[in-house]
Length: 161
Image (cartoon, rainbow, N blue to C red; front, side):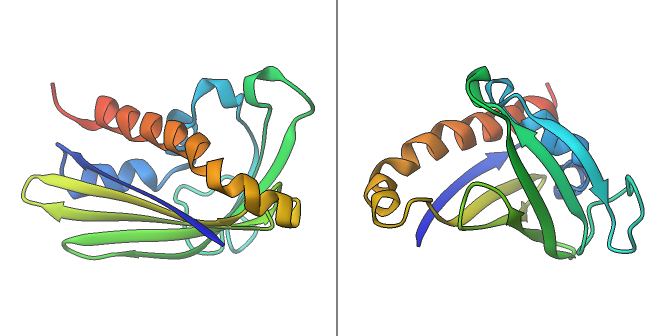
């Protein structure tokens, strides 16, 4: 198993950053356009269609076609845990179905005065067994560009000008 981590300071209060990440529109806004993301369905834990908030048990069915090349890749993500306190908030999702044998993504938000520390941690396994493990040495390169872009977009959208 490999781990990717990224941390960024956002000049916005925890409440604003948390609210942004609590709705599927945040996922859409932060996914790079080159991924060609399509949200196909969002279902709450009680099978409610299009819930207002991504709570534990919510499943998001999506597809991507990076760079417009090849067939669309299907991906189903499930919110496993979600907790918000006065100074910290976090949620964790996993991939129920998709291209990775393992994908667990923890999103953590820590208040620091009027700012928020945004932390992403992804535990993953690449497909193709030992060949995937070998490629894993370079796997972080793709994650780095994607998450650097997501964090920069979070800053752009949420920081007050």
